[in-house]
Amino acid sequence: MRKYIVGNWKMNGTSNDLQEISAIAALATQYPAVDIAICLPATLIARAASLVPGFAIGGQDCHQQASGAHTGCISAPMLVDAGARLTIIGHSERRADQYETDANICAKAMAAHDAGLRAIVCVGETLTQRDAGKAIEIVLGQLESSLPDEADGDWLSVAYEPVWAIGTGRIPDESDVAEMHFAIRKHIISRFGSDGEAIRILYGGSMNGENASILLAIPNVDGGLIGGASLGAVKFEPIIDAAA
Ligand code: 13P
Image (cartoon, rainbow, N blue to C red; front, side, top):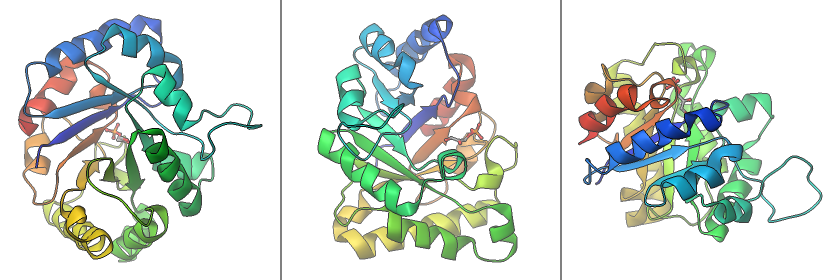
């Protein structure tokens, strides 16, 4: 399976950062064996997409409906119109800050697919849940309710992002990542049959140039969803290189 390395810029980036997007897109051309994308704040998508037309630019969320009276929201067809090819759905920061539920996330994933976007659906446990020995149960429950009934690897990826590893510099033990990704693989194969074998499972949470080669070598880790270390080409390159 080709590795998928996706940057999530979160609420970072203005016009001044367009040159960094160009640098990342230029870098990507040196790694033809890796699928690379950057998910940007909505305000930058159209400019980035026209600046680097050969490179995959994505959004970080979409509304479940195509249009309507939803002030401040952005729909999947709007992302496509702006030049996006993919979007993140159900990031833990949105689950927490915007109170997104598994049902919302499922509807958003289907909306993204209907509009022709690839979707990365995020799941992950909190530290309290892990300490209580409930990490796998929580993540499988999130998958059960946030993945649509039909999916395949051409458009869907899953990102396992332990909430306590995001932006903290902490990562789980290799054996915990392996156990979780195996459990996710089993779940998606049981749901989607052989299509579940081709759905990429990304790891996210403090992935950086130092730990990427270890994390990306774990079975069923098919790529990474990277926050802080994707904000610049220099920090992002070693992760792409590890994937290659
Ligand atoms: P960090 O790589 O900054 O920990 O963020 C991970 C993340 O949330 C990506 O979606």
